[in-house]
Image 1 (cartoon, rainbow, N blue to C red):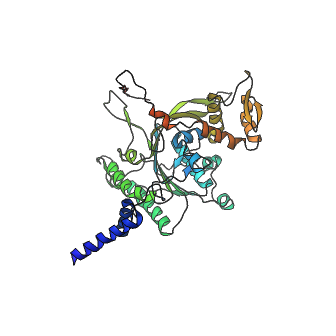
Image 2 (tube, helix red, strand yellow):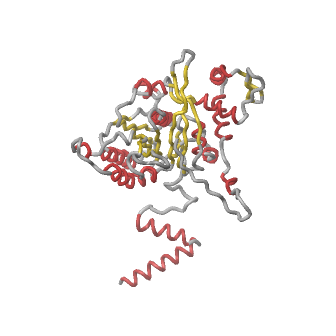
Image 3 (tube, rainbow, N blue to C red):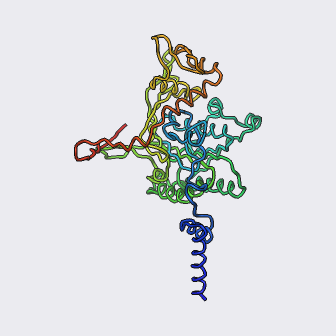
Length: 399
């Protein structure tokens, strides 16, 4: 009986192969028949690994170096972080990690998505996040937007349990909406074991083990739904390191391994008003890992304590650097817009952009187009001698 079934299955496979003309399609059909929808014909149908939507970080320049030419290929108006993936944002204190996470949540809301914040630091300012542009409560309802879902899980185990519950709820109710989940921060979130034990009792590597387990369970789930998962993390010093990078992030390496994008933020000076008061800070962002385009690119932008990332100022600096905004005299700048030269002083930049219809969107498009790098050009590898060998430079980068 068993032999007859094997022969019947083999004949069915042969018949399928004759009809489809491709054994890969036979294998895909057979896998899906026996194990559910697990196999896909890559490039011919939608798969969990496809990137169809991006969420802005709040900085168009940073968005462009992360997503490169993907927005142009998909016909999107903005670049940024890939939906269906994990993103790791980390850096020293006061470098704008939580602020950037807030911008991402705000942009999720503007796209009609559901923003979810796990505030494990108990440090969210309602007034500040509203000044940045988040609609809360009545204002969100009046605008027809989803309100911010705010939660304090209390432990790593509960964070993953709640994330799994959210994704399961989305799946069971067949909700086709963007959901961005921010965990702020990994370093501040204890494990249940740490909570139960005394302050003087050691709990070796429990957080790292739980993060590794949790991510192994969660990652396949978020890829099948429109979920962007963001972990915010801090920098800690490694004791006894004399060479190389003396810093690390709490929670082991599992977040890094599972991340599609890793962004490290650095301080880059202070911004002062005419009276000498510090009103903001410069931030340098380096994309340490990027599965969308080339990693290692970096940019700078300004963060103001009143309203967050100043995208207009960052765009201005890049367009001047690319010589798209020209400086014909020491007192003025010039930009071609709608076939006409638009002249202004540097002090009039913000006013000019806000008062000229369509100019803000045009500038974002320019930044996205002019900051693209052609990955095909990277095939021309420079060699050091006639043997064709390429010298690899050691990088013991400490920043």
